[in-house]
Each structure stands twice: as C-alpha cells, then as structure tokens.
Image 1: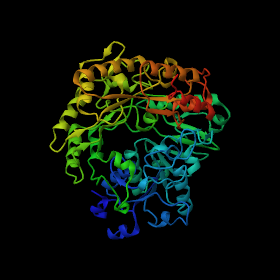
Image 2: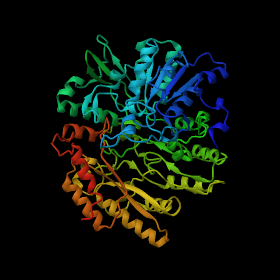
Image 3: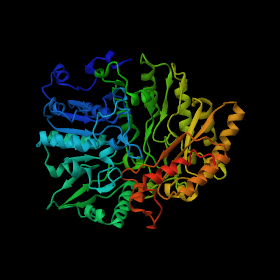
Image 4: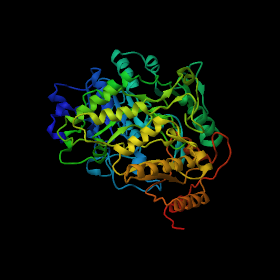
Length: 579
C-alpha cells in the first residue's frame, strides 16, 4: 500500500493547505525533522508527533526543510502557539553524511529515493538557529539522537576538536534528551498553562542554558567547564566518568557544566516507563506509511522496517563504542505481549502485508523482559554494564518469556514467517562452560529453526582480549563456544544456516599487531568476513573519550589510538588479507 491510498488527514499536516483542510489557522506545535515524514513507530519524530496529538495538541511537521533558499519552508506554517520542536531525524546527521574516513556518503536512506543532500551537517543546530532568527520570541525545543548525545560538551570527530553543548551552538531554549515522550509532553503542558521559566526548568529529562546569576540547586554536581575540557584531557575524562556514572543510576543527580559565564544544566531523567506506558505509545494510530507527498518514491529506511515490530527499549550491555544506553537508558522497558499481538494483527490487516515480519526486536533482540531480580539493588547500582566484565548475579536473564512470545506471534493467522533482524547478545546465552541454562538453549534453537532467512549475525567485534576489554565486550572464547553450538544444531537439524560475525577495526587500544592476530584467527577458524566497520567516534561514548585523550577513562592509563587516516585504513585491510 502506498501513502497515497490513505487520506492526507490521517497524517500530521505538513503544509498550509493541510492545516486549512482541518480548519486550523495555526498549529500548537510545529516539528522540524531531517528525515522524510514516515508515520511509523520506528521513526522518532512520528512518535513524538502522535504522542503530542494524543494529548490534544494541534501538531504539524515540516520534513527536510530547505535551509539553502529563502527559508520559506521555515515560515510556511506560520508561528506555533506553543513551540517549535527540532530533530535531525533517526540518525545523527554527521554519521548519516560521512564514512569513518570522513568521506561524504552518496546516499541517505531516510530521504525519498535515497538521495543525499536533503539535510545539512549538524541539522539540529542549523534548523534551530534559523528558527530563532525568524521567530526570536518562540521557544525552540531540540531533541532526538543528535541533540541527546551532545547535551554537554563533547568531542567532535569530524572537526577533531572539543565542542560545547549543542544548546550553546543551536541557541535553542530547551533540549530533551533520551526517549523524550514524557519530557516533551510535560513541557507542552506547562507552556499551555503559561507557567514561568523557573517552573519550566524543573521539568525532568531536559537541559538548558542557565545565564549568570541563575541560582543552581544545592545538590547539583558541578562539572569541569567547557573551557577547562578544551584545555585539558584530564578534565574531559573527569567529566565523562561523572556523566556516565549518573547516566547509569536510576536516580541521577542534576549536572551543571560551566560554559562562558553560564551553565548547561541537565536535569535527571524520568524513571523508566512501565509496560502500560510504553504500550500506550505503540498503540497510537500510526498509518505505518510514508506521507502521500512521496507518491511514486521509495524511502529505503522505511522499506527495511515497515513490517518490523519493536518489543523493547534500552540496553544494559554497556559497550564502550555504543550510544544506546546514553540515549535510551540502561534499563529495559518492554511492551506487554498483548500490545505486541495487537500490532501484529494490525500488520496482517494491511493490504500490502504478505505474511512476513522482518523483525521482532529492539536494540538487542534478546533483552526483552529482562531486569534486576531485586530492584532495590538496581536502585543503587552504578555499573555501566550488567554483562561486563561478568554478568551481574542480580540480572534476571531467562529467555522463556521471549521464546513464548515468538511462538505466539507465529501462531497468529496471516503470519507465514517471523524473522529476527536485531542483533543477539550471545553472552546472555553462553558462558565459558556452555549455555547458561535450558532457556538459552531453547531460545537459540528456536531462532535457528524458525526465525532466520539463512544467516544469523552476531558481534564478537574483535578476537584479542585486551582490545575486547577496552570495548567492554566478552572474551572471544564465548563466541567460539556459541559457534560450536551453532554448528552442532545446524548439523542435527539440517538447517544449512550461516553464522556471520561482525568486527570493528581501529577501536582505541587496537594496534596493527592486534589486527594481524585477528586476521590469523579468522583464517584458522575458516571464517569469511562480511560485516566489518572502521571505528567512528560518536559523542558521549567511552570510546570517543579514549580516541580524543589517548587514555583509558577508568584507569587514566595511556593507550594506542589509530587517529591518522592511513593507520585506520591499514587496520581495516587486515580483514581481507590472505596471509
């Protein structure tokens, strides 16, 4: 089914004509996005729009506005009654635009027909600055992955320098970080009620610039200033350790980072959502289609996820190079089985559905329903990872509930195949002695029998122990253990499947000798390498701080970093060497 077969008023309005069709003279909230507008729960701006709409607000969206011309896209819907919301889209615009070698990409999966160039570099900053120039008295609220990971000062790989908070560069009024449904709803409600700035700034899970003379709460943690971080690697490391510790706590402190003569203030996040709360978000009336304005065009990212279903949010893996926990949180928030089945049935009723679900998953396929056995212990925990260096004894990691959910989905009328496209954390399944339990073996066997299209992808990332330690990943021995079980089940069940490992080169702490050792082990084990990546530093991760400072933030010890492009290229070539 194409978006043109659904009436335009089933979507959020995107033009003056669509506003007038609804009888609106203006909108309460206008959202600007670096992505094409796809009304699907895998697209963050669609989710925010639907959540605000459900609260009774008149919400409009401007997808991929032209920032190069006379800026008519920024004025065509007029002035919102409450605020502008700005996001770069489902990806960081710099990661979207550039390879690890800082070369410009030739396509953009979130743009009609995959064409590049529909959004600017640092889209949040560009859009926000334009709106503040055109409408200086209208609040601008920035959010999404790009803003969230830049809420405090950070290393920018593409300019190779330390940047201030994106609030400073974008001149936005407020920043919503993380999965922002609760924060954006509270901000909207307070603005509708006309509360003062002081009350607005009490909203959880937001950041803002406090000007000179603004009193800070007595319990705020004062970080090193942006200026100090720009001058000292040790100041960067000190800040990162505090920020990561607070991000891992269920009850975090207020953070205040001096910049210029003011402070960036980051309020603690909301508690993790309940199942009922996340169910309500995914039960909203998404059309699950691109807007009709894209008639005759394909949006590659949508084609990949249109028949997928998200089961949960969050990740407790704590990998050094990953932004998931910094954005979605460490705690797993899972949908109920009833909500998932409801969405499955909605998929089946779609005229273009052919009986195949491309994914039932989340950040990691097999963290659904997992949490601490004793929540009181989790309340005081500051561990970055529940899995590294050893699995936490308080972690409930039983896979039985997820396995039964897979079976329930397969039993639904109209479902022919259900694939698992999300990555599987194999350290939840196996340890040095074998499968962690019968539930793990049953889950893995179930996936192999029913949920693969010929291959399964897992991510050992590297083979060398000290590199894996820097990555906060398990020993390669666990991957070899999983591979042995995979081969055993593959032979017994006559499945003819492939196990595809995923590796990273040039991660901080990885030398050319380490890549040579990796290459040798791959040859010995007769593993073909298809899924490889040269490491790209992204803001607010441990690995990006390592890359910038050439130190391990946890120990302060120096480490090797392949910073030059020639060194990074040499490391990547070892994936393909025959000797």
